[in-house]
Length: 85
Image 1 (cartoon, rainbow, N blue to C red):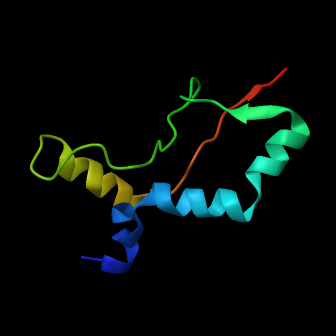
Image 2: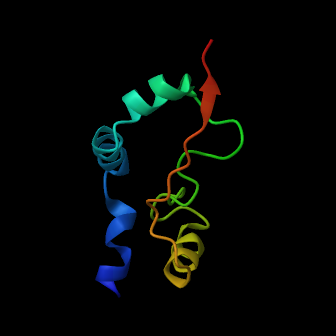
């Protein structure tokens, strides 16, 4: 198994994203642009490339193999904004 290739599939990605948003100062940016992060995404999932199935579940092995063949890391995050008045 290519352990280095799958390491990001098992990280606490929410923790990394919170750190990233603080580093990029999303609070200031959203205030300046008069937008706010949506509570729940409506266009695409927040983490569309995360593994969904648990080990042993039907489809889990195939999902895992597809991720290994792709160029995705599982850390791809989509952020949707809404206008604040």
